[in-house]
Image 1: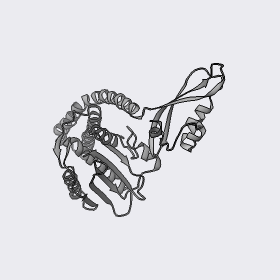
Image 2: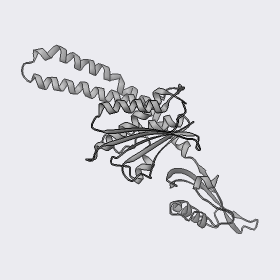
Image 3: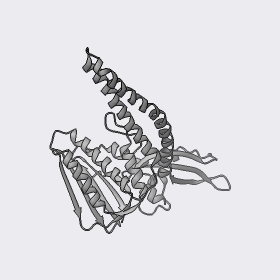
Image 4: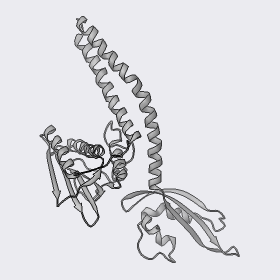
Length: 314
């Protein structure tokens, strides 16, 4: 319904479009309608991107002058279609195809490059007396950079393919606790906290994909807290929202935080705040959570740091 799409409350009957679209975020819609001329005969259509109630929406706004049989102006007929999900899926499909092609073209030469570098090291390292260290460093650089490219290609593949979901009953709280425990051992200088609120029911989910979700979110938090000089803290909590019929998982940190603009864009494909970031991590998170019938979002209610929440049907 229009009310749901536009986050409008109250009775809309017999209201002027200027009153319905009075809020500042509706400027582009109001101006589009106001630009119609009384003698306009055809429907005008415009794609509009606006932020409503903290959510970015892609809309198609169609409007036409309504006239009587005597050609007298009677009003404006407006239809609004929410194409946010459709547009996102089109983007994912388009970039998925690009990812497959790019990954294929890049990955083919990586193995021979890597093998050739290792062969050079094995065959000539012992024979080089001058600049042996430089030779070894150059070869190691080739090998390590090839591995970085391979990891990037694997990210492309993961996003492009998104293998078939294989759901099994599991304990998502226990999964989160295990993964956080691994990070606690790897990063003893960071304060990791895990909490479970109430009794969390078992869910049907793809274990490998949910692991990916936890890892991507925790990696984001690790990067964020490393940008600050204060004591680094990362929180992971799981709770059962009985009223909402969902299990909520929250990953929070006291890092550099998320700007108002980033709240709307961090899940967009190839959008990244990080220098040299690929912009795939949170897109993959959203794709996986969407695939499980849930939702993921950035909480604007936090004063310091960032809080990402994903919900799964319970």
